[in-house]
Length: 235
Image (cartoon, rainbow, N blue to C red; front, side):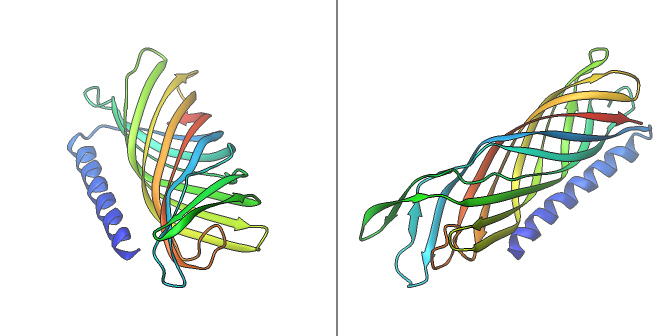
């Protein structure tokens, strides 16, 4: 966990340093904005799941788990450079959360030296919260219309609860990738509406398996598509 945090802190520090350098290298006012966003997280899944049994036997692999679509809400703050030569470039910070329950489904279990087996998964609730401190943004202005896209790193927090066994599993500060593309319409000089698609993906580790089995921990990967809309105020 500490090595993961060191990597992301170093990457963020480098990005922040470069953005500050760019800002002060071009002493023009920045176009700041605040925005609220709401939408749906869909097409999510947990994949590459494995665990180390508490008994010390060989690692166990699990098939992918599909997640329910879920409402999502959050906010963002950012800016674009106001210098005519740099108005296409900006940076953004955002945070959002959703509750993506695990669908009731069959789960395939494989382990070296053991015949494959299956079980039915149900009554698993989950929450995913993501904070993306810095995303690099680019836009193309066509009058009041602004297509844009961005990429950045994220920190995500998972929290799953198994109602059947009353067990809870959390996985914090998971470093991931976020990509997004959208269309913004400037209704007035300051007010804007936007629609946006984004994809969030990260690897995670856990101490207690999210299916409630006795284990020494394991890891997996989360991925989800997100569609949001919102209102922004540009200063």
